[in-house]
Amino acid sequence: MRTNKTTTLSLKNDDTLPIEEDHQRGQLIQRRQHALTLHLGDFQLLRTLGTGSFGRVRLCRSIHNHHYYAIKIMNKAELVRLKQMNHTNSERKTLLQVIHPFIVHLWGTFQDTHYLYMVMDFIPGGELFSVLKSEQCLEPHVAQFFAAEALSALAYLHEECHIIYRDLKPENILLDRQGHVRLTDFGFAKYVSDRTYTFCGTADYLAPEIIMLIGYGKTVDYWALGILIFEMLAGYTPFHDDDPLTGYDKILVCNIKYPLHFSTLAHDLLARLLTRDLSQRLGNLAGGYQDIMDHPWFADMDFELLAQREITPPYQPQILDGNNGQDPSSCYEIYDEEPLLPSLENDVDPYRHYFMDF
Ligand SMILES: Nc1ncnc2c1ncn2[C@@H]1O[C@H](COP(=O)(O)OP(=O)(O)OP(=O)(O)O)[C@@H](O)[C@H]1O
Image (cartoon, rainbow, N blue to C red):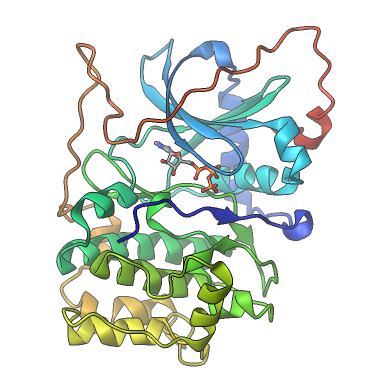
């Protein structure tokens, strides 16, 4: 079983193309931008919910409406050092553009001398990673539900936004109060009209076409969906190796040992998702994502009701309501805290021009 979180691989700086905006989305972005002029003084900063390669996400509470939010805080000097300016701007732009019941909602962004801030809905149920860690593996109907909601979000990103997500994994799948999925972390999401070449993602979840550097598109998300379903059912990923290079070899050879308890239907679906042959991979055929939804493993799933959040989640996170001193973020791991550098009015900010939209 996987007990440690996986880290994402870094990206080249030139990876991101501008995201195209249709008229409606453009208006929506403007609405959000104009509606919210935020700064740190609007929030009481509480504990860290999660850390990542480029920053940390902290629980906070609005001093105005007293609602909880999650703020992703990224150190500008560090982003510039790691050449992550384009990706960070792209993450902001993408998240402002997407609106979907299974994707985290970004309310707005701001910056001070040292940091960039992204204010999102606080998703209180914790990571799917934590559920897997405590349950070891999931009952097929539970895995089916999480996979179906993740697939619904991917289909929306691909078909309506022309965005590939590129970092599907249990760490990036959060659960809301009712137990519905919310995808977070759009740091690798990219608008792609045809194909892209960047080597990025998370080692265990990389598709063969990413490793082979031959160019790829949305097919990589459907490969990752196959790895996710395998991990939920088995409790481990199919190609894991402590040495990433050996892991990449295993992905390229693609010889999967299915646990005996996998049903024939699960085996069949995964064999069709986890195939190197793109002309065979489900999601990349004539029927697109619908072919995955129509696979018999999902036979008893009504994807229309699912999209309306009308299917009762099979797993309800145990959430405290935040009143009477209770911790509303008890589903999240405890992290060491780091104080923020104070932002003084006369400070010179050498990085502002990189992040003009924040
Ligand atoms: N909206 C949210 N509500 C609650 N917790 C969140 C939210 N967004 C992120 N988190 C927590 O913070 C963690 C890190 O967030 P995120 O993945 O966006 O950071 P990152 O720096 O891009 O990480 P990575 O190195 O994985 O790319 C998540 O795994 C999750 O635990």
